[in-house]
Amino acid sequence: MRRASVVVVAVSLNGVLGRALAPRESGFAAHQVGVDRLLASYRAIPIDANVRLAKKTSNLFRARAKSDAPGLDVSGLTGVIAVDADAKTADVAGMCTYEDLVAATLPYGLAPLVVPQLKTITLGGAVTGLGIESSSFRNGLPHESVLEIDVLTGAGEIVTATPTNEHAELFRGFPNSYGTLGYSTRLKIELESVPPFVALRHLRFNDVRELETTMDRIVAQRSHAGERVDYLDGVVFSATEAYLTLGRQTDEPGPVSDYTGMDIYYRSIQERETDRLTIHDYLWRWDTDWFWCSRAFGAQHPQIRRVWPKPLRRSSFYWKLIALDHRYGIADFIEARKGNPPRERVVQDIEVPIERTADFLDWFLREIPIEPIWLCPLRLRDPAPVPGPRPWPLYPLEPGRTYVNIGFWSSVPVQPGAPTGAANRAIEREVSALDGHKSLYSDAFYDADEFAALYGGEHYDALKRTYDPSSRLLDLYAKAVQRK
Image (cartoon, rainbow, N blue to C red):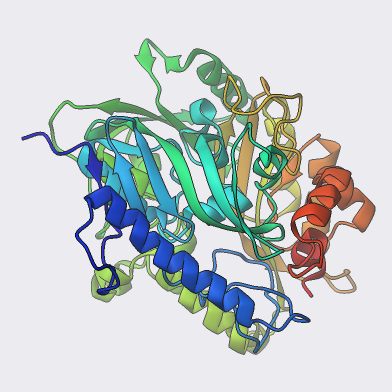
């Protein structure tokens, strides 16, 4: 039986409505209750205090400023407001996680155009802080499927920004602003149809330059060896062992793999040439082991894995372990007991033009002792939702050009006498030399002038004056680099 074309998730109003509402109307009314709570919390913050979110969790690896001041109450902005299956759109609260968003859309055979890898990433976070996944070579980045966005600005006003209205410059400048211009309260996004399964092929390469050439061709043709390619990413284990994983959407029934138990997804890439997953498990294939980072906690050791509670095999739990380490310095204490130096955290995602991918990998594998490395090609959508040679000025990728996101998440020994962040600084220099950028969710060491040149400079300053004239929100450089 076909379901109704509009489903509403946020329908509980705790008795505040005095009349029966249509499902879609009640969803938006419930959302308004959350918005009103948010605005009340904004007005309660002292005028001389910085405005921040009152949230206990984060997917950022940057140091967060400690504050005992009250923050914005976003507790009523965590759900899906409505899904319109006929229009293939969804209205979503800014703090809704992709886990909840996907759970609301998959029953209708729909999914967001780009679903970042970790379940607790929020839609608002992926738009203001960027996101990427294996559909990005055809669908771009999450903010490119946003149709309109409601933003609580630093001035305490909620404005609706679209590509063409009076707030179009805010719409263009919101991606990569990291909450320094405002916070999204509602986003209307495009969805795409997805069948129940994804068929995978893992292609091995003994040379990263051959991988680069093949990846470039697949992105251009959206196919390989006569088969359509709907998803594309890769893993580099060493200079002589790297893989591209090609995903094809399919409704063909058949057996599927399960990587939420004893089997580990990234190891399967080395062990088998083909595979099949449900669309749900494909979207969350990286979350169970946080890519490969669960090995740092022993969660990949067979004996430990057997007793590790399955509900706790997920990125959000590993985040809690990381938070404990940051709080008590556990890892550095263990290294010191072994007579080893402390370690520098090297947790970064960078983008370089696809033709410089092998150059960066050659340098990285030679200079930075971290493996594996994740690869994910991307292109801005064509046609772009907004016009211009640099349609998203705070992260100015070029339309019509293919880039590759390269992700690496670990630590390296601190060398005697080295400056703070030596490895990260070296990575920044190499990325800039290759005409690339890096994401700002982790440590950054740019000086103010270079940062302005890379991340919007004068355009950002103009938006800041318009939408946060009293500087109630942190400046982007302060938040991303100075960490005040």
